Image 1 (cartoon, helix red, strand yellow):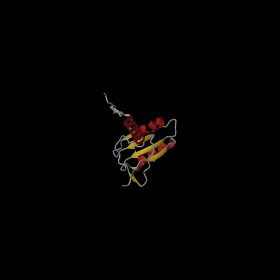
Image 2 (cartoon, helix red, strand yellow):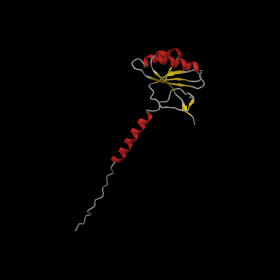
Image 3 (spheres, one colour):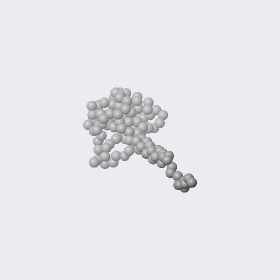
Image 4 (spheres, one colour):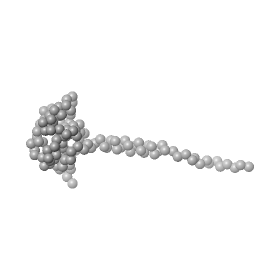
Length: 130
């Protein structure tokens, strides 16, 4: 007489819960990574009491040794206006200035003026006080 158990043990492993967790983590990291866009050049930003995160469309970086870049593309000082005109041609964009705190203010004013004449919103990137 062959006796069989009413409760069968399932030997297969279900991966559906694991894939759900991985998918949720992937979505979380994709969303949070788009909020912070590092600039291509190493810039020592000035400190500020308020440091808002702005979705960056166009970034202009100036290092303390006066190297310029627009959206991680190295340009000369004379080429900044042409690059910004090309990037802001169709829309009123948002320009974020990543300017080292040791750079003279005249460069900040010059680049901010160029972006303002192209009817772009201008923000200065800062780091919060610690």
